[in-house]
Length: 233
Image (cartoon, rainbow, N blue to C red; front, side, top):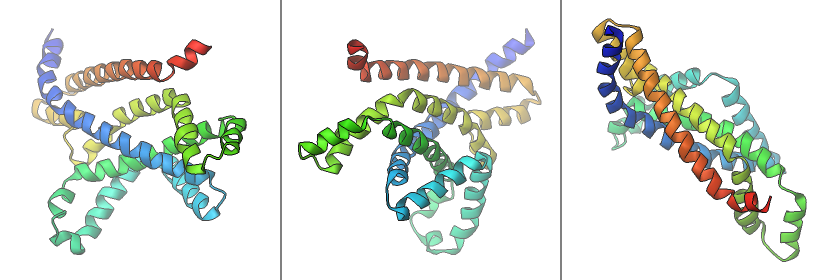
């Protein structure tokens, strides 16, 4: 009973930290999707000046642990920026906060995975649709905006949803650079209470609840975006 009461007692503090976890997930998810889409298009470009840097980017960020990337961004930029003009600019009050370094690292990592998913979805679009659009005089940019990207994003939405859920859980690594999101708050509660398992159990409950809600929301979004295709099938 003491364990249950301790877990319940830790929940309010963790609930207060949940908006920061959601902020990390939302901002990194949006930037990751935008950057990942651009990287995917670069990967598909016939020009090696675009495709090769995009390949190196995805290979590097998918081939190294996220924790290493967070450390490199936080400690690397944290050592370089103070010696530049940024130290005396209006940006410094923001760049002193580890939150922005975490968002930067999470966004790039998410972009690398999204890029490969979106690239595969674009390649799966029937070539006949692209040729038909060109035959009626549609420009490449218009084809991309009205045919290629909408179909690709709809078809890979379940995978992107899974990646978003993984991103939500990997935001716990931001606690390693002094960010008090859910996991960072749980570690703080461990130090204050000298209890090990109860704060972790409470944090697990928070993550499970958020993932459950996010999954339900994304299922609704997926059904709305694919309702015509489902009806046709």
